[in-house]
Amino acid sequence: MNSKCLGRAVISMMILIGGSAFADEPPAMDQAAAKVAVQVCSNCHGPGGHSTSPVFPRLAGQQELYLAAQMKAFRSKTRGDPEAHNYMWGMATLLDDPMIAALAKYFSAQPPSPGTPGDPALIEKGRMLYQNGDPKAGIAACAGCHGPNAAGVAIFPRLAGQHAEYIVRQLEVIQRQLRVSPIMHGIIKDLSPSQMQAVAQYLQAQ
Image (cartoon, rainbow, N blue to C red; front, top):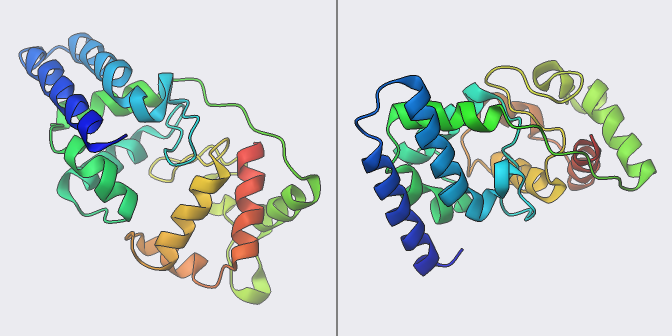
């Protein structure tokens, strides 16, 4: 989305949020969040959070607590990876806590995107790494936090069905500490590019 389109989206969001500011009942806020999701968020993340571009993550079926935490990090500018700066800092400035909670609830309730088939050998390599880690390299199993089916647990995000390219990019920015993630920094510090690709292809296929 270019800066002109982003500006229009920001204005649209301001109108929507402003129009629903008086609504303090959960159903009304849920309706306002659904409008924001459809009329603003879908421009990048796709209808119902089913993004088709690997630049933008799939939000459908994502963990509610994780979504809320990330929106608050965008709003406070504490998530500083380049994509966060370019796309989300300005958008999240307009979100108050009730709208963040309602948007997180909306996207977490959407049916997750289906997996995308890929190279079976690479997917199997990724599966082994995800489920068992690499003890010799000191890499813990991803399943320990993200769940055996990569559906996520509470604050730990859903990874199943996510764009492989997006997953690799996030692993890279976390590894380079462009995105603050204290738990992940230690776990993936020695993860190689080929391992990133394998686990990302496995997750995209789930």
